[in-house]
Amino acid sequence: MGHGDMLVIGDAGLPIPDGPRRIDLAVTRGVPLLTDVLQAVLSEMQVEGVVVADEALSGDKALPAWYPQSLGIAPQTVSHEDFKRRSGMARAIVRTGECTPYANIMLIAGVSF
Image (cartoon, rainbow, N blue to C red; front, top):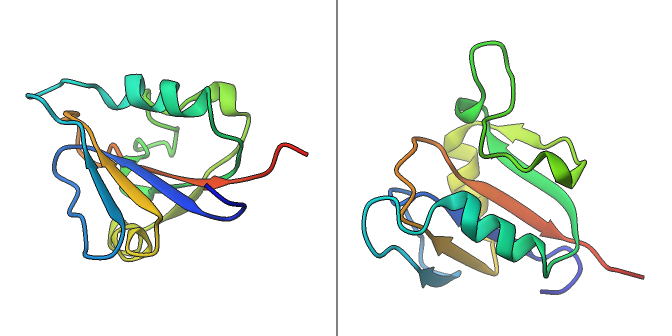
């Protein structure tokens, strides 16, 4: 991942457009969970920005339980339709076995120096 490249980690239902590499990890419903994949990716990737869909937020606009608070980055929120459009520009999209609606996150690569 180069600076500014986008990686999407999504639930089992996120459509994957032509273009980005498809990394399909879904084994069965709930395996692997989005949080497990996200934790592994974050241990290896420098992140400077995050995008999630408005629809993932709760009624009081709180971040979803799966959002990694350890990132220390407030996500940009966009409509789910816009999220799907932006996903088409990602370097890769990782499909998980997650079955929580709108459990999708776009990570924007930073640099460590």
